[in-house]
Image (cartoon, rainbow, N blue to C red; front, side, top):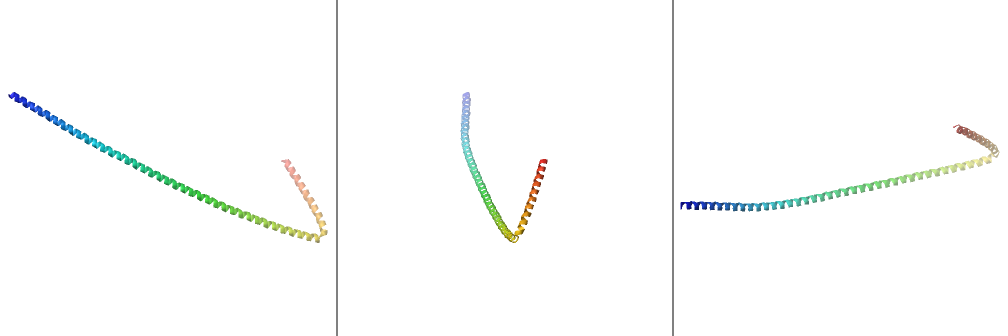
Amino acid sequence: RAEKMVMERTEKVRQFRSQKMLTDALTTRNEQVKEKKAMAQKEVEHEKKWHSFVIKSVQDANQKAAHEEEQRKRNRDLIAADLRRQIHEQNEQRRLQNLQKREEELMMIEDAALADLEKAKAEERKNMEKRNDARKAMLMNETLMKSAREERLMKDREETKKCEDEVTRRTRIDEAR
């Protein structure tokens, strides 16, 4: 009987140990399941946070890119407006210079025309005076005219002779070359 009691006790201890191990295993398993669920929940939360971070980063990058593009566009527009203004100013300056140049040319032409007119009038007066002097001289010196003609003929002959001598001299020089 003592052996039976020892056996029963041993059997009870084994059952107790077995049940304890089963409860320990179930407890551990429950803890592992809970831990796995908590890990999965943390992973989901982490993924959500990461997803929102990525979306926010993309939105921020898109906003920054849009802002930079808008800034570049504004800069391009400012530069283009400045270039148009400069071109307009240069064209206006050229136009004013051309107008001033034309006015100066017109004034020069007008001055030259006036000078030519004055010169022509002076020559005409001079010619009139010469004609009047010649008429007076003709009336007063009809006899002297004849001698003057002869003198002119002599001068013309001398001039012709000088011219012929000069032509001959130049011809010789040209031939000598």
